[in-house]
Amino acid sequence: MQHSAVPELAHTHTRPVHWVATAAAVAGVVALSAAVRPGSATAAQPAGTPQVRSAPAAVAPPTTEDVAFPIQCGPVRAVVAKKASGDLDGDGRPETVAVVHCDASMGTPPDAVYVLTQARGAKTPRVVATLVDPKDRYTVTDFAVRAGEVTATLLGYSSPDVPNCCPDLKDGAKWQWKNGAFVRSAPAEARSI
View 1 (cartoon, rainbow, N blue to C red):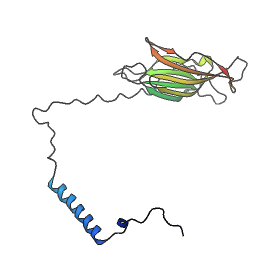
View 2 (cartoon, helix red, strand yellow):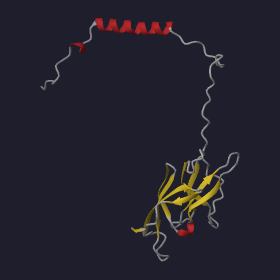
View 3 (spheres, one colour):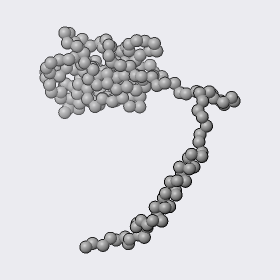
View 4 (spheres, rainbow, N blue to C red):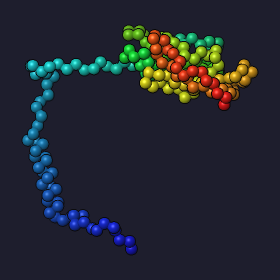
């Protein structure tokens, strides 16, 4: 038999006096809560109370539904593979960044990355920037929007002879809004994979 390293404490055994003390404490709390009640609620503020204005409601980011993306897909449709939102230009309204490719039944279609915004009162969002053009034949991975930056890993090809299934170059990219345009701040430094 192994003995406990801590000696038994006297208060670990309940006695009738403990139950009486607990019941008295609970009764005191109930009696106090019945005696102290908040005033009745009213819809109007008392006269002389300064008006506190609430913060404006958060603006929802643009959706990707019903957007005419500038990608040529022929008879197949464009598919939004990934999307993320954030305030990229600091105007207090979020933008949505979408990774889009054609819905090909075989192979790895190239991705495009578009920035969407929606003006106040507009019914649908519009594409305001192309960060990655599908003509460049990149596949976008590790895509994120954080702290006003768009980051992605781009998988590409060293030559037109490399098949679409097997990109052989890997490049990190980062874009930020500067002086009225999206600027790629992570230079193209493609590495073989």
